[in-house]
Amino acid sequence: MRTRTFAFAAASGAALLAVAALPATARDARRSVAPALSAEGPVSAADLLGKVEGCSQISQGKYRTDAQAAATVPVCGKNGAVFWKADLDIVCDGRTSRACNRKTDPWFQPDTSFHQSDDQPLSAEKLPFVVVPSPGPIWNYASSGIKGGSVAAVIYRNKVVYAVVGDTGPSGITGEASYATAKALGMDPDPKTGGADSGVTYILFKGSEVHPIESHGAAVRLGNRLARRFVANN
Image 1 (cartoon, rainbow, N blue to C red):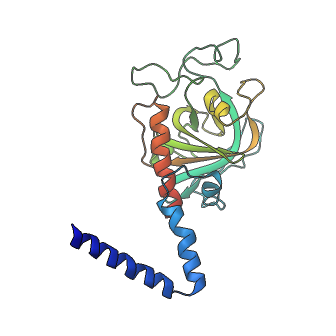
Image 2 (image 1 turned 180 degrees about the vertical axis):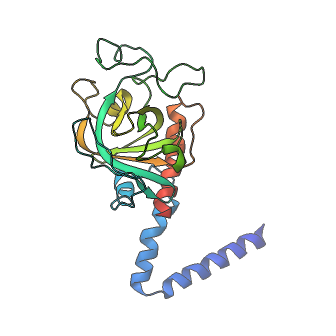
C-alpha cells in the first residue's frame, strides 16, 4: 500500500509540475474547465443554456406555439439531445385530481399517451412531464431517440426542472408541459391563466428512459447525470 501511495503521489507531483510549466493562459483554462467536468452537483441553467445558443435544425419545418401563431419553432439537434425554445401552455390531462379536472381545465382529457407502471394515466398535478408533438411531417420524436419516459430538462428564468416525456400533442404545435412542471418552475400553473408566453427551453436527452416513469426522483437523478454529460460533450 505504501508503494502504491508513493507512486500516486509521484504521478500527481509530475502532473502538477506539468501544469505549472504551461503558460499562464493555458493554466487558467485548465483550472476553469476541470471543475465543470468533474462536479457532481446540479448543472446550472446557465451551463445548459450556453450549449443551446445556436440551432442545427433537424425538423423538416417549424412548429406553432398555438393554433393561431406563426410557425417559428424548429427542433434543433446537439450531441446527446434535441431541444427547442417556445412558450409553456399548462397541461392538466391524465388522472383526475383536485387541481386537474373538468371544472378547473376546460380542455381536460382523462388520459395521457404514456402510462404509469400500474397502467394508469400520469398525474399532471403531481408529476413534471412535457408534451412532445405527435409524429408528423415536421418531426418524429422516435427518430431522434426520444420515447415515453425520456428525460427532459425544462429551463425558465434560470431555473432547471427535470421532467419526463409524458404525453403527445398536436402534430404541428409544441410548447406544453404539466401543471407540476409549471409549478416547479415558479409559474402560475392554472390551466386557464398560467404558463409562459415565451422564454422556455426544452432539452430532451436521446436514448434516456426513467423507470418507473412516475418516479420524479429517478428523473432528477438521471437528469443530473445526463445534463453533466451534455455540458461536457458539447
